[in-house]
Amino acid sequence: MENPFVLHDESRQRPQGNPPRESGPMRAGIRVWARALEIYFAYVPFRWNNNATNNAGVFVTIVGVRHRSNEPKIIFEDEQRRVVQNISPYITSGPDTVVRTADLPLSDDLPKMVMGNMARDDGNLILSPDEAHRLIEKHPEARRFMLPLLGTKEIVDGVPRFALHLEGSEERIWSQVPPIQQRVAAVKQFRKNSKAKTTNGYASVPYRFAQYCHRHEIALALPSVTPEDRAYVTPLLLPEGVMVTNLAYLVYGFGAELFALLSSRMHTVWIRAVSGRLGSGIRYTPTISYHTFPIPPLTDKNKADLMRCAEDILLARERNFPKSLAELYAIEDGVSLMPADLREAHERNDEVLERIYIGRRFRNDTDRLEKLFEIYTKMAASPSAAKKRKAEARA
Image (cartoon, rainbow, N blue to C red; front, side, top):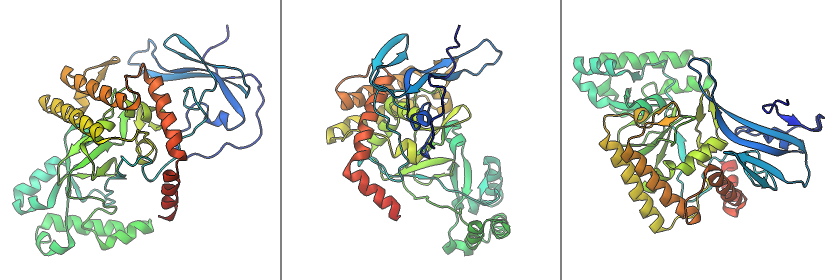
C-alpha cells in the first residue's frame, strides 16, 4: 500500500530555476510552487499523536504535487473532501499569494509594532527579583532607578525581573549608590571589549540599554513565542513604567480595540499560517505576524464593540488572579483549561469580530484563513501599500 505520508511528485523530475527568496516562513508548497508545479491535493494540518511515552504531538500536513494543470484540486479537512480550483502555499483555496515582510502595517487601523529593549550589558543592567530586593534593602534610594522588566517568559509566567533605568542627567544621584555604579562600570568595560563595533559605540552610554525604545506610556506587549496548540495569542496590557526586553514586542499609542483584534481567533489563525516556528512554538514577529494582519476597515461602532470585548477579556483575567497567562491559557492533553468566564469572553470577541468580517460566524479555521488571504491580497496590492513600501525603502 502506498504510504500516504509521502510527498508525491507525479513528474519525478526537478524543474530548473531557483525559487524566490522569502524572509517569511516557507510553508508546505512554497518552494514547489516556485518551480512551476502545483499542489493538487492537501490535508489541512492536523495533530498526529503516537503511543510513545511523553510523546509531544506534532502537526502534520500531507500534500501531493504535480506539474501545473487546469484540473481541479482537492483539500481534505475533518473527513470532508472539497474540490477547489487552486491550492495556495498555505493550504487554502485561493491564489498563490505569498505573505511578504512589512516594516509598516498594511492596515491603517494597526499602529506600528516595535521590538523591545536590548541590553547588551553582560547581565549588569538586569536584576532578578532577589537581586532587586537585596539592592533596595541595602540602598532604599535605588528603588527609584528600577523598573519591572518583561520578556516572553515573564509575560507568560507573570513574574518580572527588574531593569536599572538610569538617565545621564541624574548620574550625580545614581552614581552615589555603589552597586549601581559598579554595574554601570562593568557594562562600559563589556561594551568596550566587545568584538562588535556597534556594541563598542554603546560604551559611551553604559547606564542604559543599547537598543532603547521604552516610553513611559501604557503599552501592549506580545511574547515572541506562542505555543502551537494555544487557542489564542495572549497580548498583555502594561501600565506606565514597565520595560520590555527584545524577546517581546510592543505597541504604543493604540486603541483598546487593538487588544480585541490581537486576542481573536482570526489573529491566531493568521499567525499559525504565516509565522515561523521556534521549537514547538509559533515565532511571532512584527514584520510577518502583525504588520501583515488583514483586517477590514473599522467604523467607530466596530471599534466601540471591540473595545467592550477587550474589557470583558481583561476583566475575566482579573477575576482569575493570581493565575498567570500560562495557567489561564494552558492546554492539557489537547484540552483547553481556560476558565469558563475567560472562554466566554473570547467567544463573544470572536463573534463580534467575525461579524465585522463577513456578517456571521465562520464555519471553521479554513474559512477564516481563506477570508484573511482574500483581504491580504487586496491590501498588498493597494496604492497605500505601495506608498508604505516606498517609505520603508527610504527609511
